Length: 94
Image 1 (cartoon, rainbow, N blue to C red):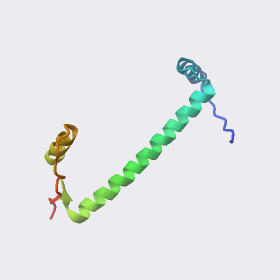
Image 2 (tube, one colour):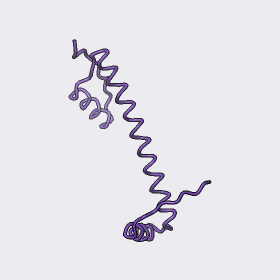
Image 3 (cartoon, rainbow, N blue to C red):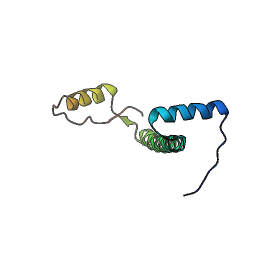
Image 4 (cartoon, rainbow, N blue to C red):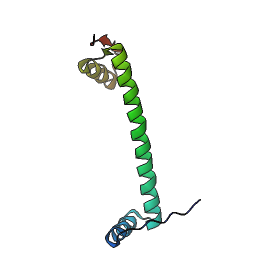
C-alpha cells in the first residue's frame, strides 16, 4: 500500500471530518471510500461509453433498431411475469 498526500482547503477538511463522523468513519476511511466510489463510477462510465459506441457503430452498419414502443411492451410484459417474444430489429436506415 502506498501513501498519497492531498491538500484540502480548511473548510473542505472540516466538512469531510463532519461527514465522516456522521457516517461513523474516520476522515481517512471516508476519503478513501469516496475515492474508491469515484473511481468505480468513472470506470463504469467508461465501460458504458464503450458499449454505446459499439452499439451505435452496429446501428450505423446495419440500420436496424427496435422501436421504443416495442421495447416498452416487452419490458412491461416481462416485469408483469407474462411471457413475451423478443422484439425483432427492423431496418430503419437505408
